Structures are given as structure tokens and as C-alpha cells.
Length: 277
Image (cartoon, rainbow, N blue to C red; front, side):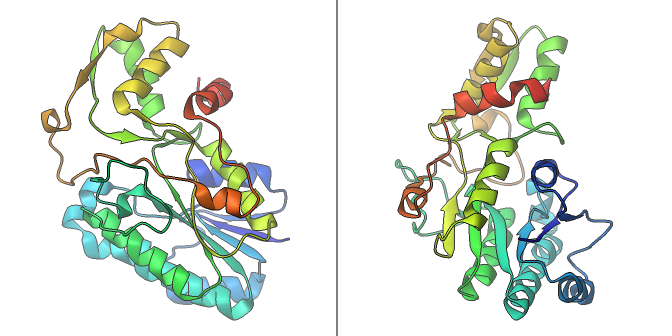
């Protein structure tokens, strides 16, 4: 199996590249997905068996004022990838997001739950999902609350703030699933090697918590007093883009495909901890 990874310079792309000897790893400088001709030429020349698209416009708040630019990366470019992969017989794995949901459900969102994004970022990522699914042959892997060793993320910020501040206030009314990029990389590789049918899969750790709960766990692992973390509300930190209150995702399609779900988020955090310090 030959692999091509776009957005290879980010957290997930770096972890994938480290696990795949010989993968063609292309960062934004090597392949700008907005250049449709370059994308088509690269895929037709290299003819990979599997393409993993880790590239995305991820500046959620900036997307509110620059939705067209975000759509060019998260939607239009993905359509080019999807159609070109179909032309050469490659499997495309598109990394997507919990932000395609509105966050109002009290229950975890199933893979086939109705989508209803509440911000521009979610709308543009949903456009990318639809482009992949329209080919009838690709995978969409929704994930959320990513952290890892190779980029800015919430866990890294909490590690830094523990050393800088006596106390911090962290939002306690947004629920989700912290997901280590190392686990997600392993799951993407397993998905590509399986006979799983094409469609949507939820690539998040099991369980649920809030940003406040995650921050307390980080302080605990640092040997610091978790009570130095105080709970607060989303309203206390107004942002341009609305955030879904419930981003917890269900994982039924993994077992249907004969693949185990990802481990609980606390276990994953401890597993990845040595790489985060």
C-alpha cells in the first residue's frame, strides 16, 4: 500500500508520517490544495493507493469573516481530491470534525445523525464531507479536541499555564472527547487496511468530559493541585464563532466494521503523556 498525506506538517499529519515508512508526506508548501491543477497532477503522477487529507482551515473564529477562503480549503479542495482519487482508484480518508453538529443533542451523535453546523468552520467542513461521500468510495473520519506533540493545542496550553499562573478558569459547559493524535493515526491506518465499507466513522476517544475536566486531568498528571483550575462558562469567554455545547460522538460503526473503538480519553492522555512534555 502506498500512502500520500496532505497537511503532513500538522499534529496528525506528523504522527501519521512517523508511522508510515515511505509515505509521501506533503505539507502546505509542497502542495497547496487550493491549486486544483497541482493536486490533480500530483495524484496522477504518484498514483497512491491511499490519500489521507489532514490539511484544513482550522482557524474557527477567523472563518466567520473569511468563510469563502475557508471553503476553498475545507470544501472545494476536498472535492478536487475526492474526484481525482476516484479517477485513479485511490481511497481518500478525509479528516473532519464534530463541528458539523449543532451540539444540542443530550445524547452522543451517531455517524448518521443529522448535521446542522452552527458556524462557518462547520459549514465548510461539511461541504468537504459531502464531496467525499458523493464518490461512494471514501471515508470521512470525524474527530475533535485533538492534542499531540507537534502543534499548538489545549493540553500544551494547560501545561504552560500551570507553570505560569496560580489559578486558571476553564470552560465547564462544553462536552467532548479529548483525542490523542497518536491514537487517531493508528486508527486511520487500521481503517485503510480493513474491509470496512466507505462512509462516516467517528475517530474520537471513548468517554466524555469538559475542557475544565481535561484541564484538571492535565494538572493532576503534572503533580499539581487540580483545584487550581476553576470552572467557568462559555458565556464568560465570548468568541466570534459559536461552539457546540455537546460534541460527544458515538462509535458504533467501528464495531460494525470489525474494528475496536478507541480507548477512553484518560487512558489515551496517559499513553501520550511522555510525548507532550
